[in-house]
Image (cartoon, rainbow, N blue to C red):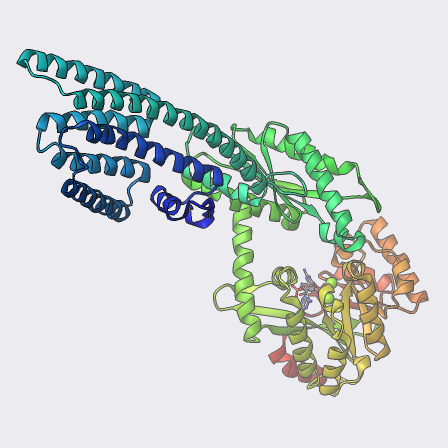
Length: 638
Ligand code: C2E
Ligand code: MG
Ligand code: MG
């Protein structure tokens, strides 16, 4: 750390002395700290050397004789070098190292000067120990040191008196000056320590501020993803079965659309307001995080009950009842919430995020509901989705998705007018997977475009081998494919390659596909129609169906959704069917009913004068490899 932010604080004119002190005292991160360190070391130096100088000045065997001066200087230089090297070598805490070094130095220097008088050396050592204690640890240690010195002083006096020895003036001066310098040093160090403590507090406060900024999302003022990760790590590390945390993961439905339609600044306003409303509702019961984009989390620690959490989820969903006022006008929004509760164990805590996230995903996609509490069934669904997605990638890469063709009959004369191409997949690991399942997953994971293209090219190539001149092949495509700019060109290219007439090809699209991508879909549909390809509106009647679409989106054929036939016997339903059939007739749009399973359904459709029909009663989807045989056998019957 120190090395990262070292500041060059060498004042002008002090040169190598300050550099030496700085290098001995360690790199400082602020000029203030550097000054403090220098001062501390200078006082140590002063306090240690003072008694030495006093003594050398007073003794009869003065050090200022030539040889002794040399000796003294040699010892001083040697010892400081050794001390400095040792300091570096052992990476000692520098202030303590310096104090210790000075103590060693002084003892070594005193030794020869006293000519081996053990009482003097012991005295010096005794005096220096509290001095060092004071220097390093501050006023209280200094006081203890001073008391020790005074006691020693009286002990020495007493002993001298008892032994009838004269105590030298030098020894008395040494003790007095040492006491003085010890006290001085202690007072100064304690002053600096107080200063340091104040500084440390200021730094701690600053650190806390910086920490808070680093953990806060600047847009919403919620705790951010980093804070969330730390909180999650903490709860899985400090698992305690008595504390049962719970987690909400939320996101705003169709937020991308808000951004795309109104721009990012309006998107920001929506997020800000939502976060504010969220914090108000949650209050003190949990901690709100923004995980990024439109994703939020709330972490609860005080063992909330499932019903309390669900109540809160309802309140959060109710936040969307009031639209958010933005510069671009009122913006509506919706929230999906996934809830997970932990039993407090480490394993459960560490699963919390995954479970809440899966529940949120399920709330949005699977259940169509706005809040869901995690359960194992959701887990199973998510795991299954993941498995299907992985295997689907492989199947698409290997082009192993097959096709079956289901005939559509003219209900008046029993002729086959068209064949609907339906994707079929038998995976080596998963076995048979229904298109209702894998198409939805392909749509979510953007595999659908490639899959649709594969089905289009294969179905056309296959159909070209057996399709009658008056018959058509009908291919389902997803909303996402319609968004592709070159989709129509792709279809036409493969129609030509299969040497089929464009009028023999029908593209089945659903209403939802049209509604979700009106402009892009309209453009693609216009291109397809211009090329002579027919458009069929599939699953008609279950979406936001409005016949007004038909005016803007001229289609050649409408396909009643299967649900109409399931309830066909209800008179209100047959009435609706009758009016749609009549309207379609007037608009010169063909009508086909799918999912015919019973004779009653067929009879009703005939009665209502529905032209075409498709269903298990009339013919099940036939695998592509059997189509040649099927067509031949039909010809034989005819
Ligand atoms: P869809 O386009 O409405 O296709 C009709 C579905 O009804 C097919 O299911 C078909 O097998 C089934 N069906 C036909 N007759 C009957 C019947 O009498 N009773 C019942 N209960 N069902 C009947 P499938 O093949 O499972 O396809 C489901 C959906 O998957 C299709 O609905 C279509 O939306 C989608 N799909 C299938 N193949 C493709 C494809 O190649 N591309 C795209 N984008 N979607 C496809
Ligand atoms: Mg279809
Ligand atoms: Mg359908």
